[in-house]
Length: 319
Image (cartoon, rainbow, N blue to C red):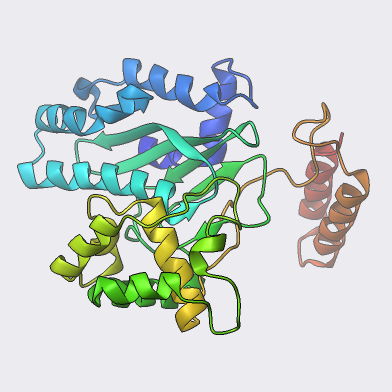
């Protein structure tokens, strides 16, 4: 349990990769570290790593079944883990539309049936990677399920259907697919009430790389199934980024239930890097942040000795 908690912590994972000798700013930090863990950790140690980079990620379900059996997990628990693997990948690829296409996916499980996911996407447009951590304390698959998202770049806009702010949009999307698909097709073709151009004329414009059409076969299948929850809807085969995004845009423009467009990345670079990666250090912003922290320490109720130690630690963080 302790190992899973540590690997789900982005700071511990990053530190482990650096201790192993990998470049801190390389996408290989994630893939090679997970590969090394997969080799080192066997079911005889009570922990197993499933999946990997590229084609290896597609073998995750098979490996979960094989290693879950070796760890003596019940068949039902193993299938729950397979579902967790598929849904975590689908959420970060389809519900969080930030332009980072997943190419690495690892599910790490233990003999108690607990699991975490460490996966990574690549943005060809920006030329960098983004890592997604799912911790062992799970909050479901839909509303802000990740424990952390780590990236050097924070985007100005990214469709985030997992945000709490997207709750009304998710409900509206569910209502849309439970109604006759012909109505949705008409809504796509008709001008918006405010006189804007047709919806399908500007789909895809708000983000870097997005599809411009809905998978109507998937919409019809959803109508036949009548899903009761948003999770049930997005878990269906064929409901991918295009369908999720198209439904969200219809819900926004036609019904007024807007989704969140705030980038959900939670860990990034605040002031830049000394080597100019991902951008040069903003010394003014850094000094201002240090002043705020220094004032906070001095205004606290810490004892004199503890206050001095805190100020020394803060001073040690400065270049």
